[in-house]
Length: 386
Ligand SMILES: *Cc1c(COP(=O)(O)O)cnc(C)c1O
Image: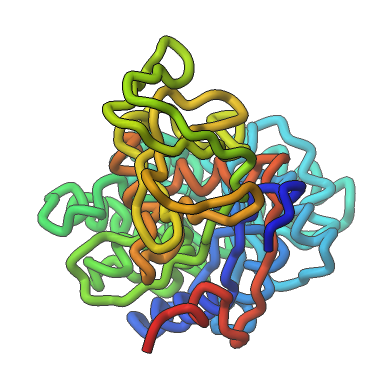
């Protein structure tokens, strides 16, 4: 594979997504809502949604309505919820596409009811409670009003309250008392909804971290994003599989003497005669500049440092004495099975979350994304020595 015209390649292993869906479903009796927002965390919404549904997910979820409508346009008609909309959204398209919508305010309910009147379709709503992160749910002091308004709109046939949802902000630390507080607030919110006459079929609070560490938060539906993609809290013993492998072909190679300055601001100076190889991707393709000075890549089975500042379109690696040629592929990240860096390593180097790295790589126009089908063995696993 020595074709210098090759571009960086992000391989998404759908078999890993399938296995993670099954592993995570097995942790609970609750149904699994697969979160495919942000193009399935950069992994490809269509392929991930289909794979998750094939392997046990009962529901799909997105942040925005646009994302949900895009799921429908791909011909996927599973139950689908979106939870991030403005109070004056035209919900007509949501109702026509049978998309459930979250409502955190009475204005949302009114907009949904107006769309129900306009389309002649009853809206399915999930009332969204803030249980302690002051982000996108209704604060406790407005919850009663929200529930009573929903009940009125139910009685006139415009909406059905299909769910009550909340979201936990600190569940990645199982010892954090805010998770217990959040659960208490959520139970209170559900009880209040019932007192208003609502009978939400779905009660959902937990995302990946709470699913894996706090069984009492599961309710009867869990909304799982990160875990599908192999990202989860450590120490749970649940073997999630990272799904992405990023490789890039070497563009050019040069031999340089000691004390050669490399890249912008001479961010690196070689300390010995060595060989530098250029890779055709940089921070414009989602490689975080904050990983400068720490990042490494796997070259012919050995880790080699990225040297100097990251450019927008390129990075330089010091390959030592490796006899590498233009077109040869190096591995920037993968599951780690061959010693290559993982998404977690990149996140640590850049002082960020793996989520931020994979969403950035997934939307990079100059990286080709390819899906390996579920069940088929991915390329990188064929290379593991027995
Ligand atoms: C992103 C998101 C999730 C998924 O969280 P993970 O930690 O990735 O599993 C669940 N619920 C809401 C409201 C979200 O925004």
